[in-house]
Image (cartoon, rainbow, N blue to C red):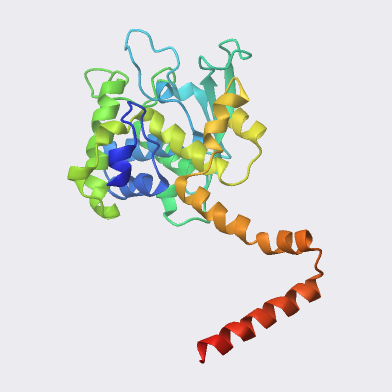
Length: 278
């Protein structure tokens, strides 16, 4: 309640926490077309920290950065159980000035050693989606609003369509996180939330800021610093870390050796116990 009353209201989109990602993925039915599509694009967006423009278009008449099937290379093959890595050719986006709008390669790695199985593996999820949706047209967008019918080719999904499904899935999955749907504004979550969540998680692993900036396709380190900052909980824990060092600094300030400091602490403890027994 304190946070709600004292934190200014802004239109900044929230980052998608890992728990929220898993909650949604657990509700994705891999026996359905949409479940396979959303598992593939959600894991790619979060682990790859892609911008949403690679999976959903703002304007169907101008699909500048949309990912197409010819931009994917599966290694060593496309079989779901055997794929180890998916190489992805992305259009450089607006923030990478040095790239000059050129394409660049990135990868999605197979994940075997984490809970969640296929749900936590962007490489296998993409291979499963390829097996489901690819119809031989290598220039078609990877992610569409619906399956291709025998009569017409399905157009790329728009960002409006992407966000509608995303927010519906998140709303339905909140019960897994013990969150009251009435107290959570799903409109605060958008395509960029995957990127924010993935980069924040990667930043907490201790990866160097230069590598984080490269992974994020940032033009400058200033854009990256937002993902290396501590959370409120981490800042609170920093107090304990700093306090654990204070006794050492106290000894230095008093000019005491470790042995002398220990003797003093023992004497103080004995005195405290003596007073307690009176």
